[in-house]
Length: 502
Ligand SMILES: Cc1ncc(COP(=O)(O)O)c(C=O)c1O
Image (tube, rainbow, N blue to C red):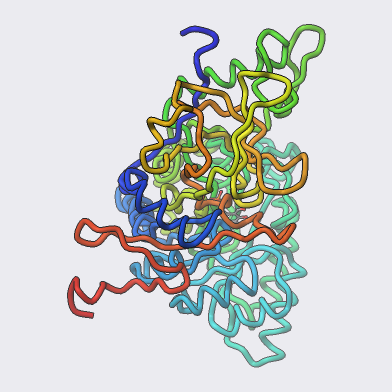
């Protein structure tokens, strides 16, 4: 392929999201009516994704629950749609008092809720009050919870003990100190588990240990398989002390494939190294290297990028994790869980909202850059906080939705490189620092669709700087071949009146 061929990173788009993107007129009318930026969600897809995870459970004959990590998206529609799923199989992981209140208001009963993350007394009290399971981070947090339970005459609260700092093989006998998993602010280091077990024994009148948990912020299967196996073995230790844990919660991090073609991803990452070395023009705004730098003619550093093309992600990643032999005992985690009669809990965020949404922005201005005549600045009616793919190191092209008839506009001569800039009066407000190649130059009035933004990119970093509008969010459903929409907060998982009985 010619070196100057456009460096596309085209998104992975599956049905029904692909069908929605085919409805440019419908999407334009939504932006016309509701403004730019605009978030569009497909609540049906989140339920289908939950079922895909559950089918992996069925394949391995495992029981347990899929807890949606709510932090990935603020939407009511997504949480309500999940609340309507099988209560035994689908729950929600909440990481704040606000998320807990929201989940309860969306129809989750307390017994389907897992409370994780940093917890203030109000969050702990409400979680215990409604019978949620509390994922306890430290012996100190356990003590605070136990005091609240006793002090307020609450029922004995179900807890999971979250662990971190899993050792390598050398550590299993208690002698080694080499830590395999990366450090975390959350969870009790395995090396300090003894203190945790003692606290669980001391407070057993107020809390009941139902399982062990971890969340590793890595894509490494090996690291996760080792932690899972370690938890199964530690549960045996707990049982020997009279505690009765029955579940392993392996957290989230199953991942999403954003870029459709492996070859495009490889070409772009290779080209980035070449650009950093000065062997080709910069691929980024002011030569930003995404963590790479040139030193004495070689590339140094690590690219701080999400692996945007993934051969295995989401439910497929869970399947692989459960199937591969675990490092110490040589049996698969699925077999270990079955043999020990343990339930499996997972907390997918990003992967559960895969293909669930798009963020739309109006093209406001198109002009040539000062320094390179073949590059353009495209200003959008959104800012970097409205679509924070870049913040998460996710590089993927937007889809251009031309305004009616714009395909024949004078700008349609062919592929171009553009810098996507936001609506803030701030040099740093770039939607991405990458030069984005598009099949043709956009025109003011076109819409750009950023695909697959429901996981962390839509609302996690949105703000009100300069009083720019925060995106509204709508839920769309397809009924009898017609797309319908409503404000996110007005979506309830009920059949539309014309479609059948309530
Ligand atoms: C405890 C916990 N569970 C689940 C998740 C969700 O992770 P992901 O969105 O990568 O699946 C997170 C993310 O930070 C987390 O901290």
